[in-house]
Length: 248
Length: 260
Image 1 (cartoon, rainbow over the protein chains, first blue to last red):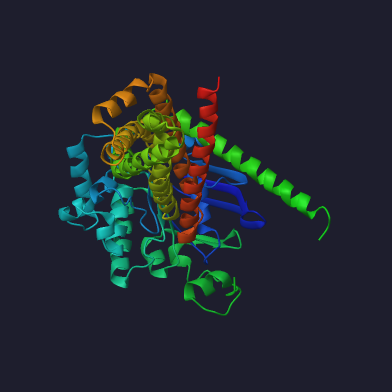
Image 2: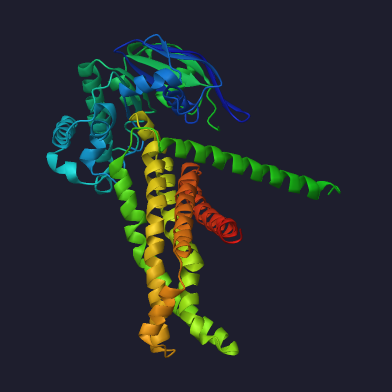
């Protein structure tokens, strides 16, 4: 279980997170929604230690996620970045098998490549893709390679940062289905941040809405339409009128 | 404008400079500490060695060749004013190995390598590749900075040695073909007046300059701002700071090596 208690983060004078309290049970898929600039990415980065919270506590499996425990946490972790964040200088298979080529999980080269090709196949890419470089791939293919990299070492926790941004509806559907399938199959705990309501409905077990630095609403995905929260209602229906200011 | 405004501006600039020195010092300490702590990344080190050392050979070689030739012409022209044309071979050799080889080699490597490292790491930062490294249990300082620092520190002295030889050869070519020196006499004068420490001091300078080049490239890349403009600024800052630090450290090293 991932737990955040009273997490605060400001950048200079600007408060971004103002007391986040959230629980993600083991094996559940939580989707965090909210307008642009509401701190969704900062929230993920706080959990990863890429941004240090000003206040509050983050625990994973009951262990405080401090510098000492973070390394062990990251060994069981995978992430799909918004832009893919593939390493330009490495061919696709070495991107996917990055963890398996170095560090404590290092495997022989051939074995690592075989696993990478298997993971590529898992996300719908052919073995021929393995030897290409990221710059030779389309946006959708890059997302899928990034997804293959995220799942390569069978992580227990996966984060997805805007998994369908910039993709056409069909490719977005493919990615959503893959994420749902992988999370269900692997039994991993997942946190996704997205604006895409189709993704929310496809991926989420639980939904949390972030607004003004706080969790505005949290609940099961099948209750978002009947929650009765005006902020959530405006967001999921994409209305210009409502309590959420459109000029931010 | 108050009478104290210039003083306040001066004070702020001084404090900003001290803060920058502090940040670079912490970065350097952190980077150097990774040289001695596993895991090590031999593949990245080898690739950095090729990029920094091998691929810089043409630019360093050409620079040295023309510098050696021009140096021979200048010393000949200056020496002829007091009938000292015969010192051309020895002054070319000493000038190349002590000063021009390491300094010009270092500056050329700074232009080629510091910019490339800063742009590469800066782009990696902007496109979240550095964050991706962290999520893949890989320390960016260890994976990106350490191999480049080590490769530059080891390969620039080799580049300097090759540049020295090519520069002396450039002087020899000009001396023999344009200035009428006897080839054998030119070579004898070159070798006779060159001492071991002349060469060794230049190589030590090369190692220091290589370290500076990689350090500035990595530091500015890791601290790059957002977007294309941020990466552009980081690249410019890397080249400028590496060049200035090379010239400043050259003065300090020359002072330490040759005036005691």
